[in-house]
Image (cartoon, rainbow, N blue to C red; front, side, top):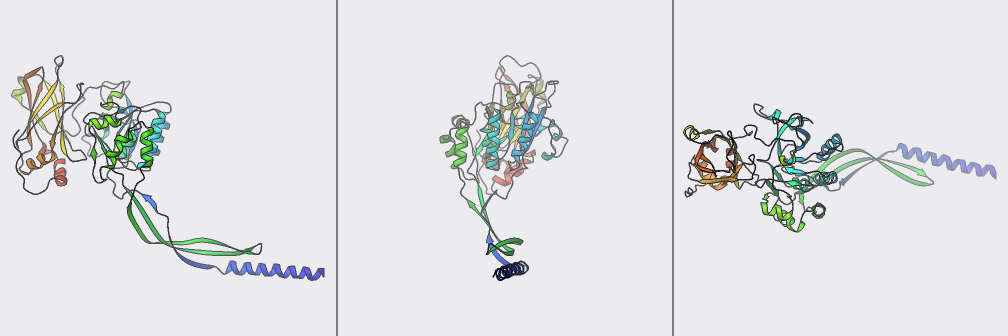
Amino acid sequence: MGDRTKADSADKQRAAMWLVCVLALGLASAAVAAPSKPKRVEPPKVAAAPMRVVIVRDSRPGCEPNCAEWISALGQITKETPAQFRRVFKALGAKKLPIFISSPGGSVDPAIAIGREIRKRGLDVAVERTVFQKCEPPATSCDLAALKDGDKGRADPIGTACSSACVLILAAGKERLVPVYGFVGLHRHHEWRTTVQKLQTFRVHRRIENWRVVEHRELIAEKEVNRKTVEGDPDYAPVRAYFGQMGIDTAAIMPLLLGTPHTGIHRMTPEERRRTRIVTRFAAGDELLQTASVELDGKPDAAVPSAVDAAGAAASFKLVAEVRPVYPPSGEAIEIFIRVKASDPPAPGAHYAADIAFAGGKNLVATRTGERPADPLYAALATEDFCVMRRVGNLAMRISIRDAARPERPVLIAADLGRDPLTARLASLYCSTAAVALPAKN
């Protein structure tokens, strides 16, 4: 009886082993059309180079050996950007430097992650771009990816914008500085959802464990057969919570954000910036640099060619002035900045203003933007006026710069917006070909 029981047991073991071998050798293949889970991706169009984050040393003369430093953040915010900030923070250790940011926006989640780290470290943020010494003329291009810690540069608030997801980083600053003429832009977030359907081929393994068949699938091939991308509805709850944690008035800022389509941009007015608390001080970022010189150090990197009227200059006080146009992302106007520096000691209480007369018949007044000598004069030419004057070829302007203390002794400058290559791009975006009437002379 014992021998028979042993024999039966041995037969069962041999049968089980035989079945395992058959199933292991008899591999089955199955083609399965399995749609992958929807995943969130960014819009396919990238508006700027990926953000580059580096530590910069002030290049302006007269600051050695104690030249100021700051963290420069230029470009589009991507999923790789937080790692760049972490690298810089690790290099600085306990040292604190202000962050000068210039960005059209980008990915929301990385911007929030960066902002939390900035607030944790108690750093200040200013909407300010860095003009790197290696990128100034005669250099014809500048590769952001080639920038490194320790490169020299100068801070420049003119023509700097912080839009979309960039505002989330700005919100994190302990102090948040933007000049009164600075650009802070909001719009609805844009989210894409992509569903991918794939044809997957598996190798199926089956074996007997405890008298039960156990199946294991091994993916051996995969082929995409269909892809569908649709616009999704963003979840604004994390953004609301984040703004609240940063001390921003969500009741004031969210309607501005939600009320602007993602295809447009809402430029926050100085009052909106104050009311939402997105700005703590209307000032240029160099006010955060304790050891930085505030003197102008030369021509801006994109000044409009201009000429001082010799007769007017001889009869007036001496000064240096550059005219610089800026084209805001919202496209509502061309902003004209005039940076003035007296070569002679200015009179006590000297305050400059400028009258701008276009050959096409439009007159503007450029007024002060601050109390410091480095603060530029500012005027805005509406896009529709620009389009009319460009169409008839009259973008030349005559600028009369005057000191409020000596208004009878102006300095005359000639400049021409038509000689700026960026005007052609602005015209292609915003100027229609329909005939329009010339503006009335002011």
